Amino acid sequence: MDEESPLTQVDLPVNENYEKETLDPSHRSCKNRWFEKIFSREFAKTFFTGQFLSLMLCGTAVTSGLLQQYGVNAPTSQCFLNYVLLSIVYGGRLGCRSGERTLSCIIKTQGWKYALLAVIDVEANYLVVKAYSYTSVTSVQVLDSFSIPTVMLLSYIFLRVKYHISHIIGAIICLTGIGGLILADVLAKNHPDSSQASNIPVGDVLCIFGAILYSVSNVGEEYVVKNFARSEFLGMIGIFGSFVSGIQAIILERNRFEGVDFLSVKILLPWILYSICLFLLYSIMTIGIRYTSAAAINLAILSADFYALLVGVFVFNYKFHILYFFAMAFIVFGILVYSIKDTENRVPNTPQQLG
Image (cartoon, rainbow, N blue to C red; front, side, top):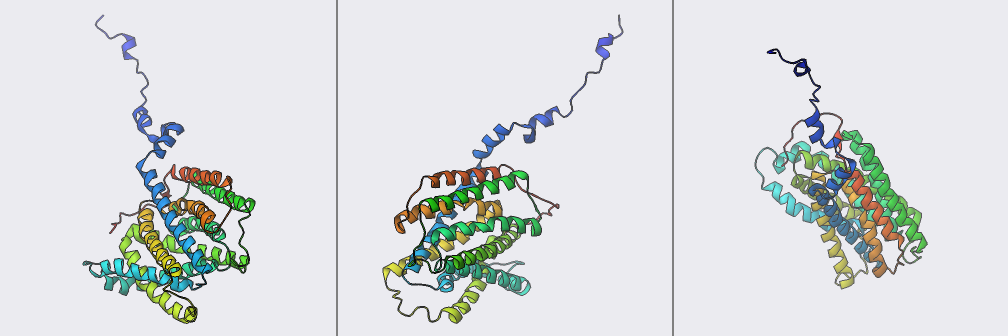
């Protein structure tokens, strides 16, 4: 009787991974993960940052369209003030920096790289703004979304980003929403007339090439802001961008301002608003890219197309179509699908300090 009962000697199976499976988010229901993602701070920051950037992008589109209507066709000069502001605000911060990555040290060691990136950025702005003189604001906004697949491809190649199926599906859903905007535009017959556009195919091609250059600039921006500092990217782009755009404006646009009354409110005000919107777009985008990615931010700012269409109803006399709202819902849903799972790197990252 003193011996233990055989029943007490039976080793019951123990699930050593029970606690891990219970606590591991990957084992939670898909519904719970979606719910938590929608109401998470990370998604809220990405979404609302994207909406602010979309409003700024919409502002640049509308003011560019107004300047084109008033006979101002100087895309390089139009962007020059933005680069000057970046060089003053962020280049000044670099000039006051002490330590290893001072302004002079960056110029000596990495100056040619930032100069090349500035050339790409200046020409991207030039091509997109130039497209407004050939096609409509709506077409430019829609075709500018071509940057999304390009950003994802470049991020995969150069930043070693690993995309999951949810990222691909999310991007496709967002682009489907853009397709809905195009369809709504066609159904509403919001096409530019001869006074607004001189050669639509040329404008579309310029916009596509501009979107590709934007993609290169955004991927370079992501690398810099995640490895060094956002002020470094903005300051160096501002310094070299001012130099490049200034020379280009003198060469290409020195005779473009004959007969333009810059004291007129209808020209001066859109020009100033364009520069402010573009400056804020550059400044805030570095924050969004630093905490998410270039691809995620490019998806988030697709809603700029929706805002531009709404503004176009009042400014450019576009006709409204209910399909606009369904297209916007597709874009938001696509952003959510893309954000449900974080991207990963295909190779291990070494710890890097953000400045």
